[in-house]
Image (tube, rainbow, N blue to C red; front, side, top):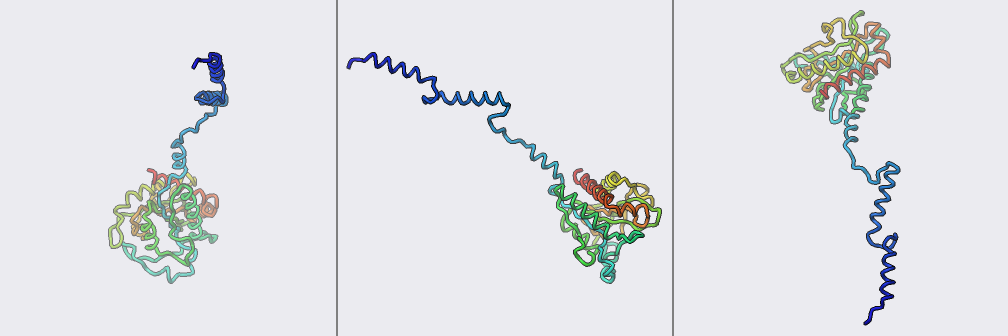
Length: 288
């Protein structure tokens, strides 16, 4: 069959005209789309692809909750209801080095502000500060019971929680003129139900950190009547320490019987500083 040269020329001309036009099909569309996206990115400064996620959110979360995975027990000294249950709290319990009252009423300021009210307030503030940092916080009581708990049960609460640190919050009842805070550390005791051998060292480290941060946060000085100015006192007669199997200290935040200290202890803003100082000390110890 003879070729029709006119039809062949017309077909060639149509193919040549279609090549540069969008919509003619073929692979020419993809490069044009890519060029358009690149142009847009250069003009706006906005990348056209989603960047790969980084580890920064994880690092930020870790910084915001530095105590995540840690368990801390807080022991608010005494109980506001103890004075109505003298028979129960006077029952003796084993503290390892002897027998002692289940609990006591605690002291008061000259104006009647009780140590039990003070310790509960500071302990709740401390709980909130530690929880905000990711810690699991266990309280030995929250005034939900009529009296107690007894000192042996208080120690058991921290032990059973396998707490990384335990702090018992108190205020002292010494003579007028005796001022300042102190931290009570466990002595080395190995007798009967008590064995502090493993916790003496870490408890001292915890106590030193709390003493340092407490002074900084509250602006108060270590006690001028014991501890040789260090704010640290070692005792073997406290069941809450003797019976503990995890690092534990008592914090005596000030002397309620001294008018100047009492003015601090009854001040809401100061109590928040006290809680912050204890929290900072615990944090330093756990991150050390």
